[in-house]
Picture 1 (cartoon, rainbow, N blue to C red):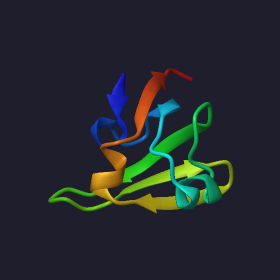
Picture 2: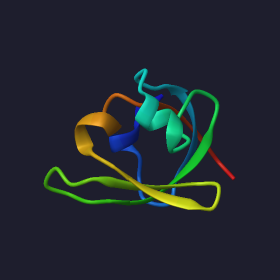
Picture 3: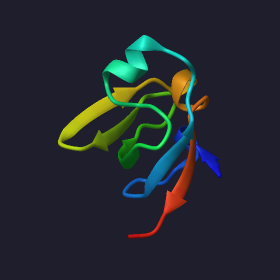
Length: 73
């Protein structure tokens, strides 16, 4: 299991644990959701993830708190 910030561009995974946050829940980040990493910006930048049809930027500090089980499609 990796945190979201450790995942490679293009990889997919299922969220196993995420901080309790109404903001994260409102954008679709919660336990059990499938997501795909679009791009991870270096130097402390955000991670762009796709959830369903939405692309969402998640900051580095928050991404490090989201645990994901990588899947292979």
